[in-house]
Image (cartoon, rainbow, N blue to C red; front, side, top):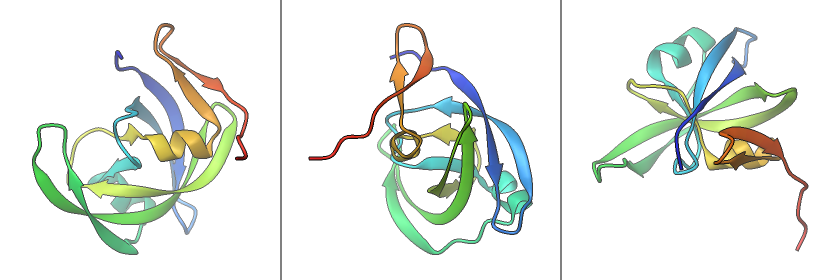
Amino acid sequence: MGLFSVKGRLTGPAGPSEEVDLLVDTGATLLVVPRPLADRLGLTATRSQPIIMAGGQRDVWPIAEVRLAVDGRETATRCFIAPAGPALLGAVALESLFLAVDPVAKRLVPVEGFVG
């Protein structure tokens, strides 16, 4: 699937908010927020989680809560705080927003919720 970006708004727990370009990455579990942005938003880690990066490198990254708005939809979601790099829109955040990826048109599309 080709990569593409969408505009989103991230809001920290005390209210600081920023519009950001989010690289859509369904291979990422959570939303990924680079440390400088996390600091500006006032995000506080609640725990840490071992991660595996695309190249196979392993690390442990902090996890925090953030508000995310994309395409007129909003949710509270967990995010990894990365040392650097781009902000990534991962699978859990997409599912929380009830959005899916149209890989041909390189856009997000609304989906219905599923109940087993």
